[in-house]
Length: 395
Image (cartoon, rainbow, N blue to C red; front, side, top):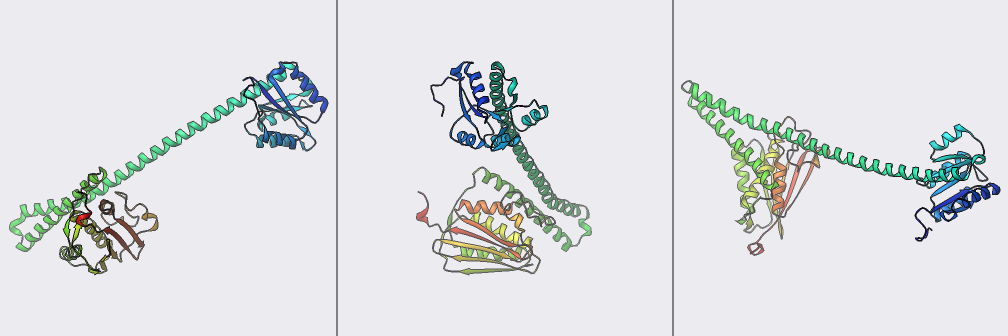
């Protein structure tokens, strides 16, 4: 290996030449040109050269194309493939321009005809070969850095485009979901204002109900947007209070049956013994409202929807199961990302916020959520929430 005491302009050369007379001549040429700057290692076969290249470090290779164990450009190909970063100067007995061009194409830095070699020409060729190889490597590295930067910028642009796509989709969905109840309110209010005397009491009451329902939908939509904004800013509060979660869930199902007109077969099931413990009612409400609303939204009328709650030693498991349209496998990984929806729900209104809200409510309570679904067969969402006792709360 090269010694640390050797000068910076020291050049170590591997000569691959089977003609001993030619080898001695090349050695003498180099010897007569500042001997202390050159170290020549001579081998007669490609196999020997590969062994030296594996064990030692060289600055340049002088390669004869006619060797006992390799002929022509095959020799060059072998060396370049073995040490692609090492400059190679080809030596030949014939002044063949086509061979010279092909040698350079295949990785040689220069091409020398033996009978035309002199001291200055050989040294210049070696120095130029080394320098050209260094410049090539520098350009290659610089080019790779530029490629990496371009790829990074393209990736950033792709993320921006993706973000803009999501924003555009959200604005479109939000506009649709906002406009529908707003249109209902305006039309119903207009009828009451302009044709109240012509409307029966029953019709007037129906229009008022539609206004109240549409207003409630608008409030819920705005609440969801505000909720996501707070959770993104890590401002989602956790305010537990004493509650029997079984009774709470049972009441939620009763309320849904009333407000949804009992169009679905809502069922409540409980297993285990439920004691009063600490729960955040607001977070529970978001979890149950969104899961049950999704189950109803994506299921046909009259199909069963079940809320099952199981009490265990340190946790409560909430499961909402439906027989609705289900979720495709390719949509599963994006379900908890805000404004993302399944690819089979294009005709069903929604913002894609429900499951994102559920997940964040679960995480605030140190719980876990999982989804099992088959497209066309239904969906089961399981939420596991740890039971918190008063003594578990930080003082």
